Structure formats: structure tokens, C-alpha cells
Length: 162
Image (tube, rainbow, N blue to C red; front, side, top):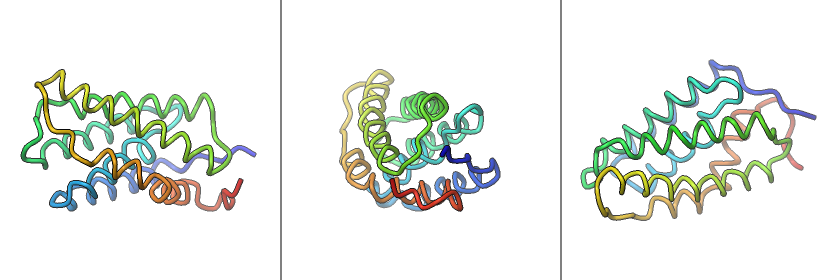
């Protein structure tokens, strides 16, 4: 049983809500990183229609860079977000998932790749910078935001218990 993708309107509304929560959670960088990674890896990617996912990922990268005072503002995060959102969308089209466990495993792997790519891109754009703990909180909470994204994106398509 292949799950139907969410409507474009529903997906855009969820992305807008996550982007708003990202901006509002700026005083709490750990929480902001969780919203950021959830938006880029779970909510924005769309199989077969990369434009909206790419735009949401770019917006997430620039919001994150713009809201952190000690973080370099040269676009490394936006570039890494764009790349990972396109990869996640391609993976969703190439290897569609039918169950929650595979979804969570994919998100955990993409979260690790995201942390490495963001820090590498920011290092290329500037120089050495503090890593912080955002990557850790995002990876630690994958089961929570991954399950929530699964439920929101695939509402009405079954329970997802496989």
C-alpha cells in the first residue's frame, strides 16, 4: 500500500507554521534547531515537485542564520538546507516509504547528514565556528518530530503502524 502525498496547500501551510515556530523560538537555539531540521527534512521535501520544498528550505536556512547572533550569515546553512531538501524529495520519489519505522530511520540518517553538511558549508563560507548543541537536540528528538510529521503529512492514510 503506497501512501498518497499530502496536498500542496496542506504541505505549504505546515511549512509556514514550522517557519513561524522557528522564528518565534529564536531565544531557544536548541528548540529552534528541532523546528529547523523538521521543516527541512520532513515537511518541505516533496517527491516530483522540488520547487516549493527548495524555497521552504532556503527560507529556513536564512531564518536560522539571521536569528542567531554569533552564527555566520553567509548562506552556508541555506545552501545545505536546499541540498538536503532536494535529496530528501528525490529519495521520497525514488524509494517511497510505507511505514513509520522506515520514515524515522531515514530522518535519523538525513539528520546526521544535515548536521555534517551544514557545518561543512558554514565552515567553507567563513572559517571555524562553534557547533553548538542544535544537531544533538534535532537527532535526539527525531522520534517525536518524525512521528508528528508523519501524522500531519499522511493524515487519513492509515495508522502508519508497520
